[in-house]
Amino acid sequence: MAQVPYASAIGSLMYAMLCTRPDIAYAVSMTSRYQSNPGLDHWTAVKNILKYLRRTKDMVLVYGGGELRLDGFTDSDFQSDVDDRKSISGYIFTCNGGAISWKSSKQETTADSTTEAEYIAASDAAKEAVWIRKFVTELDIVHLISSPVELYCDNTGAIAQAKEPRSHQKSKHIERRYHIIREIIGRGDIAVQKVASADNVANPLTKAMTQQQLEKHLEKMGLRYCTEWL
Image (cartoon, rainbow, N blue to C red):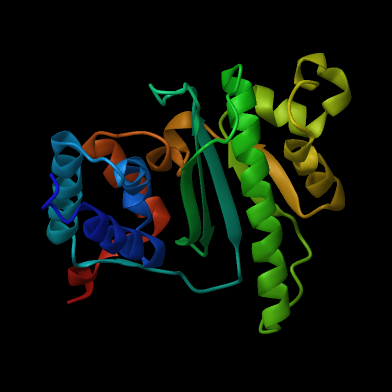
């Protein structure tokens, strides 16, 4: 494996992922963890990502017209890391139907429950929503965004903890920094809403999916084949 350009390949994949390919964010996040000591299975996974990109090289992000609309989706996969039992966070924000910001990463702390993992993921997404909202406002090319950014989560418990903190004793052990989502909601920057798990656009950023499931989410991310217009 010493002769395999693993780190170089990961660097190229990260560039593609960060620029225009949110659909490979989870796979790149997983494979990038083993740059210091990759195995044959890791290299095979990297080659599979490259093959996928070659097959879908004509796929581009498409944004709709009309009034500006920002939507966010957040998700987590509870204790999916087999080494340290930490969970995976994922979020994606769309502007008029096309992705503009996304992230897939392992959580820094070990969550005790699915609800806690979802709450941590939602907190990270909420902070990103604040930045996006401020950035769009400072561009000064559209009217001030007066309405909150809709942030969709598929976990009822996490939504309840974010909206009604006083009624949830089990959340006391969660690190304070994650409770910032409550302040963000209170300021009116975001509004957390429930979404069905099957319709959560952030799903592909936290777990592997079947081709049929992935294709459904690609459309909601705004990824289209440019050949559709030729």
